[in-house]
Length: 435
Image 1 (cartoon, rainbow, N blue to C red):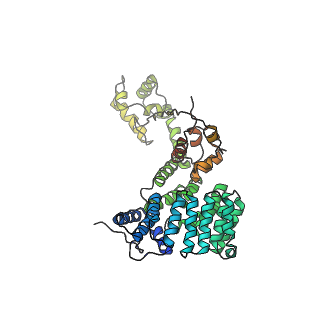
Image 2: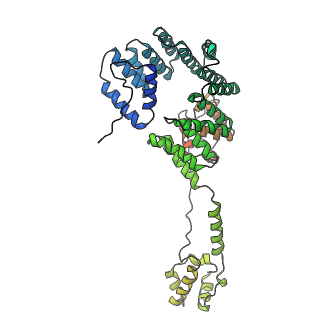
């Protein structure tokens, strides 16, 4: 019997949910893969409904599930109200239609929206449009909230960060947390900024504060897992990734990251294991003359060129018995000697050599593209940190690197390599290959 997911807020009821109710519904819907699928089914069940109110609810639902273009189509024909203008603005902002988004935010004021909230949303739209002057103007228009609002300082921090004023950004994030310790956006922004600056201890502390909250914040847990992996704390890294997979079992980045961590863990240097290996190698190098063997066995081994235990282990029983004058009695003698060392004939196998091949990639070099910074690739934290360690700042510097050079960076796995290759490929670029 299929278990049906129930939501506390029914978006498609007769009464239009408030903005707070829609926000809470969005958090629940996106808290797990199962909830998202159940909510998508609800949208499809209501998709054929007509009327301005129905279009409003369907449009909001489409926004919540990330179908922004469809959301705009529905919301433009929906009932005029605060919810319509705000979620139409959100959808347009996601589509980078910033001027239209701002127009709808201003229209929401006439429908009764909170002035402070709309000023902060407009500041976000202006900031994403790189119109920093207008963004700052909207934020400063609410200066009377400076001593009471975490959101005010969060928005100011995001603006300073976009302008490259990182110290001022951090100060504002910290002020936001002083006013509201559980302000999730400020926690994440502060964690991410500390992460990029190499302050791992602070970043881990902030990410952990986010990680214990519900619903799961995927980016925070992934970034925390990267930091743990850098510190070779593989168990903690896997805990972070497994927490994501518990609610989002098909999350591809988490699945690939899990494989990378498990691979890195398997390559971890085990001192005890290496000591045992050294002891075994010393045993294998022991000359056969150190053992009390019969004269017949000694003579046979000498003629066969077998001088150490390691040489002996490469020989099978059949090969020994096929040698002249080497019989069952000598074989039993040898097997007993090996058994006393925990060894047996044919037990030393050589590992096959692994051949590595490199794929040739066509080079396409556009100077205007190569002059861009690696930040324009929108890479994950792990990839950014690896490139920073390698001193790679521009695409021109990046395409001079080989796959081997990138993979040689500590804890830089196949997932990050594929991420970079995909980003370069979309620009017609590729990593350097060796002739």
